[in-house]
Each structure stands twice: as C-alpha cells, then as structure tokens.
Image (tube, rainbow, N blue to C red):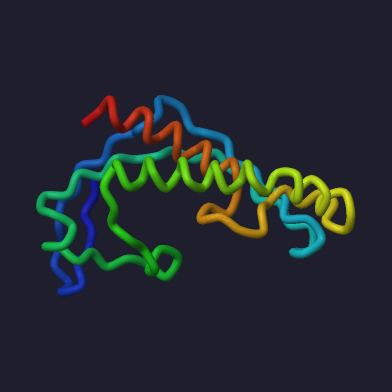
Length: 133
C-alpha cells in the first residue's frame, strides 16, 4: 500500500498489488538518432486500487506521467491491439529503415506505444489484470 497526494494536498491510501509474479525485462535500443542510447530495466506492473473513482480524486502526478489518460480495460485492450496492427503494417518499412540508415534502432517511428517491448509488457499485464479483477 502507499499514500498518494491529491491536487488539493490531501493524502489518499491506495492498495497496491503486483500484476506479475516476477519483474519483466524491458530493453530499448534507440540507435544513432539518440546517440545509441539503450534503456534496460527490470520492472513490475502494479494494480493500484483507489478508494474512489479516479475522477473524484485528482491525484497529483509527477512530470513524467502528467500527460495521462484514464481508460477502461476494454479501451486499453483495444489500444494495444490497434497499435500491434499498426506495427505489423509498418514492419516491412521498418526493416528497410533499420538496414538503411537507422542501424541498431529498434523503435517504430509511429504508433501509440514507443516500442514493441512496451506493448508486450502491457499485454502481459492486461492478461493478468483481467484475472485479478
């Protein structure tokens, strides 16, 4: 569990639970467009049970997630599937780009998710989340 701060500087108690038994591995090679930066981390996905509906609380979030959007599980599932379809359509173009000027860059130029490993991480979380709630 944890306490979160609201926009009105009140604290709310939130129950937190791991969605996956073990952490998931995330790696992203940005390639030359970002000085060959590589992000690599183990991460857990969490279920945070709020004491009220999200629109009644207004949680104060940091800058990294300030541009957020609350969606239903169904919308989330649809979003992941649509992004996967978009990725499949661009796969051949991406293959060509990687081999002609974007070597070692495994990220797509478009799509709602920045990278296929994020999409897979969210899909695994969604699969487990549906079993939990």
